[in-house]
Image (tube, rainbow, N blue to C red; front, side, top):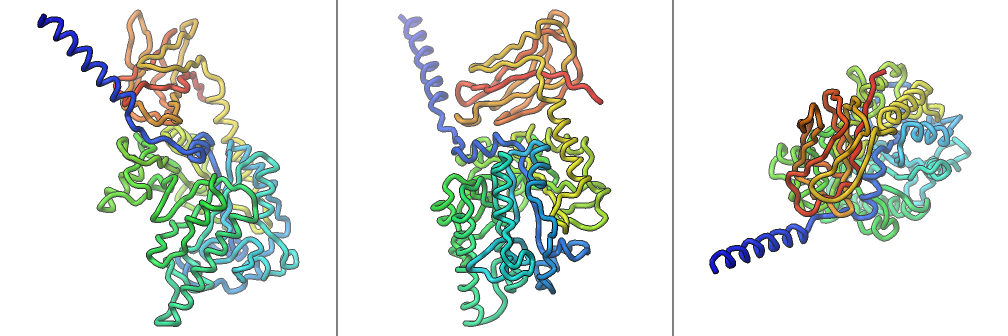
Length: 462
């Protein structure tokens, strides 16, 4: 009798634990977050008045001093098709343009901001770089996004959302600036069709602090766009550096709906870099870096004589493996020149990078998918391998918490790698090993593991 009772208790406990596991309320991505993670690589084009002055870019100065002559804007050979072809050759699936940056100058035809392309002689005041850019994106199958800078505006004397002045003078100008910014966001969201992402430079603060109330505008007119970000919502988060990488592990979940968690700066940076496996909100990490960031430079805008600072392919591959391969989306900064073209050395390097990604990771030795705690790959014959790529089915959240990779060597299973976070993609390198079988063992999970893809590679060095 006691043994029967004990057996029933064990079965009940097992079923209860199993049920709790299967009903674990894991955060999941919305459709725009899923598309953003699956894109893996995007680019952001920085373009503003100071590209044309032939000087080194000084961010602090540009945030404070009005640009002396906006008629300097004159990209005689502007070709946004060429920009997008270069981005596509690198493997980018989306592209973002700085419609406004810290000078406050708008690269489109605005009805609410007089400091825009209507005011310049270029194309008789009828040019619209945003329009050209969006059309080029659609022409080449790249998803367009827009970067809007409203936190600083040296033309209107705005620093960190606040206009200069005192008393009613300041209050009236602040109200004007707030309405103007909301009008610009409305223009961007309504005049250029569906957009993939709306990126607010440095965040957009909270309307309770007197900042422009931009979230409802984006949600009304661009409900399928990634919103990044203000103190109400961040659908993605910055990964904590401009190195193009994130540390491992990097979870796609976060404890707050906005990317400002943590009581101290150290806690905040840790959360931005690593996320929180128990976070209630889906907020994957962005890794960003400028293409011209090598050998002591870090340039988001074109500058003269900067070609020596284009990252080598090997550095770009390190970014890719430590961003995309760490469950993050990589956004690379590109710099059109004063003629309105991507410089040829940059175009060449982007293609070399895209080709190298394909060379290394487009042809797996073997691949499989499935559910459960164990997936095994039969390689048909003994051969050398040195990388695996694992992907979860993140439509149902990040369920895997701990795993190991084993290879069958000399009649025994040998652990060749392990980890915790997988998410959209985990690229893992290990010392070359000769085997005919390799397997993935899930040691801990919050619910039934769902592996979208488990692939093994032999990546040769050039």
